Image 1 (cartoon, rainbow, N blue to C red):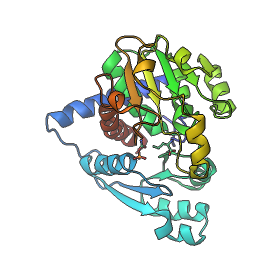
Image 2: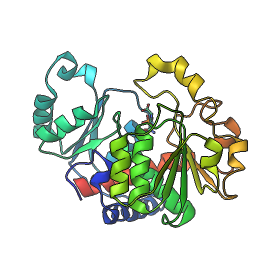
Image 3: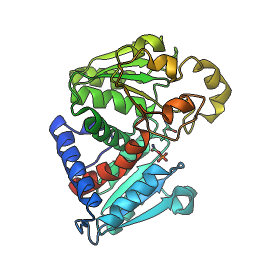
Length: 301
Ligand code: CP
Ligand code: NVA
C-alpha cells in the first residue's frame, strides 16, 4: 500500500483486490450488526474547498463506525482561507490528526499537502481525479458482475476527474474502456498514457451509440463539474447528444449495469427512467463509498 492516495494509479492490482476484500468483509459484518474499534482514538481531518454530500458523510460515518473521529473543515473557516500556506497547514494538522482527506480545486494542492504532511493524505476529489469514488465503483461492479477482466466499460460524456480515475481503474483491473465525448472534452492525455503503460485499452470516440455497443457497464457524470460553472451554457449545448437514455441502453448488453457517482442531473447526462430504472446501481454505488473508504482508512492508518 502507498502512504497516500492521490491517484488511483498509486494502487496496484493486489492493493485494489485487498481493499475490496476488506470492504466486502466490513459490509457483511455491518449488515450483521458487528462493530469494530479498529480506529479507536484515531482522527481524520476532512478539508473541503467544494461541496459534498457522499464524500463528507461516508468518511465521517466510516470513522465513527470504526471507533474513531472525523473533523469537518471548510477551508474558509480555517486560516488556510485567510492565506496560511498549504504547507504550514499540512505540518500543523499532522501534529494533531492521523490522516487528512481533502477535496480541492487544484490537484497540486493535494501534492503540496502530501509533501508536507507526516500523515496519510487522501484525495477526496480534485480537478484531475476521484480515486475514492472508483474504489466504490469497483466494489459495486464486482458485486454485480463477479469479475472485472474482459468487461466492456463505456463512459458517456465529460472526460473529467471521475472519467480519469475510471480509465485508470479499468486499466488496473483488465476492463476495456471506451469514452464517448465531444471534441475538446477528452480525458487527460497523461492519464490515457498511464493507463496504456499499465496495459489498459482506452478508446476515445465521438459517437455515444458506438461507445455503448455491447457495454457491460455504462457510466456518466454531470456535464458541469464544480469549477466549470462559467461554461454552463456552452457545456449544456455541447453535451446534448451524450445522454444515457433508453435508446442508448438498447445498444448495450441486456444485463448492462448503469453507474453514476451522483449527484445526478435527471434529463441532462442521464434520463430519469434510467437512473431510477432496473439497470441502475447508483444507490448501491453510493453506499459502497462507506465500505470502500473504511477499508482504505484501515490500510492507510
Ligand atoms: N460522488 C461524490 O463524490 O459525491 P459528493 O460530491 O456528494 O461527495
Ligand atoms: N465531476 C464532478 C463530480 C462530483 C462528485 C465534479 O467534479 O463536480
